[in-house]
Image 1 (cartoon, helix red, strand yellow):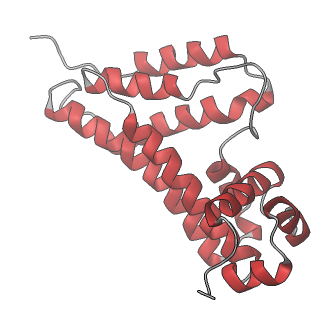
Image 2 (cartoon, helix red, strand yellow):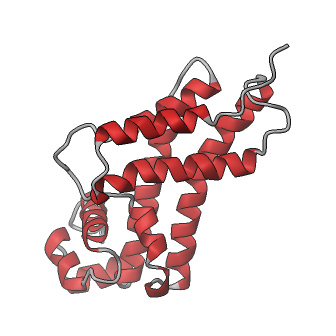
Image 3 (spheres, rainbow, N blue to C red):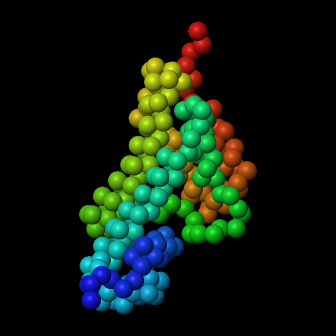
Length: 196
């Protein structure tokens, strides 16, 4: 015997992501997790220690995927890249194929239920999303695509708020058309450099 787990760890973490995304951390039970992952309680505790351990790994995996998706968006200019990134997260279909919203944002709203490590993981995940947007804005400043006095830190929060609205507001009834308009409004706030 090699001592390696006799299950697909990636599939287990993916199943846990779905549970936490659908139910939230506080409501998701160990029974929900064992049913979704196919693990016994003893296997779950042996590998992940407890619900918190599995949550932290699920949140880290989710964060990695979202940030990778954000970084994969390319365009011919920083401004176009920002717009393309926002549009990439618009709902593609009217029927939801996964739980609504952002698992990181949902986790941040559950801070009172999370452990210190869970809180740090949720905040760090959101911080990594903002870093991607800040990098785009820094590139824009380097290329002269924004005003020299533009506050990039504040702008990164603004565009993160827009991104989170795009991801989370469909569950509150926002239509695809409304969200497309939101992207246009957000991009109209881009601080264009003064014309020479």
